[in-house]
Image (cartoon, rainbow, N blue to C red; front, side, top):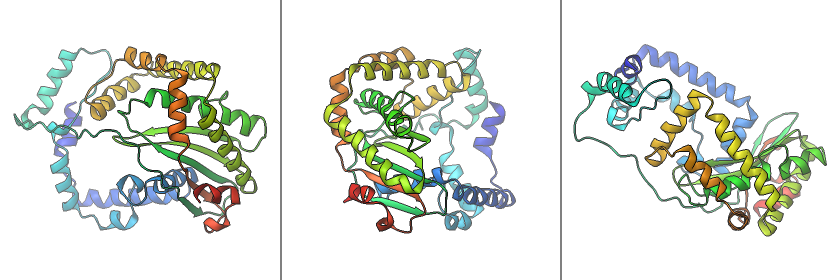
Length: 327
């Protein structure tokens, strides 16, 4: 903790070091250009949320990275990386009292009484679906497709039901997406759904990687599955499987010390508290079919946004089944 505190609080951001790291980040950006799934994820967020911070790539742009001076980075670091803005999360064979002692020794000289800065708390609210499409032209052997809608954020009361819905629709080998797209039709090797939540918004999305000639068919099947779930919900057997999968993955994650630390730290940052595992398990167990049906209607009935990476120059080059999604 002494070493980490010293690095985080008193990092020098020396000009020579900034120049070295600038080149590293630019190389990372270049590497990202070769990772079509990463490009797809960024394009999808832009399709859903448009030109606002959450709709822009986290990594930024080469122009901005190239223009940042050492003094500007140093000033940002000094303003933002202060103890009163930090959360210390520890997991392992150590007591809370021992952690406090380490924190006081390492951070104490830098603390200023009465300057606690609370993280922003915003009420979760689903954003409006933009129903737009983002197309990135890449000469690739495989097309990458993502279709999805906005949801609520980390404090959305419907999140447990949405998690069950996500697991049932595309969370594993027994999910509807995997069974109908891969097992029954052989249209794609990789297909799954994802649920990503932030402070006040989130997204539900479906990913598939397939032959470019079959991307239209894949999109049509995905759309049919989501429309069916929105209208008819999912049955109790699917819900029970999904709940079992969520419980199992949560408990297996706790076998790893790093996961325990991460869970505690993220809970403190996102929600101001670390929720006990027993509480999370009860929330999953409390999900009823009616809850899942309601959230399915609310989320999956919205006009979807679409992102595609593949050999397509513009939106009008996409198959009709994809163009029809965004009007």
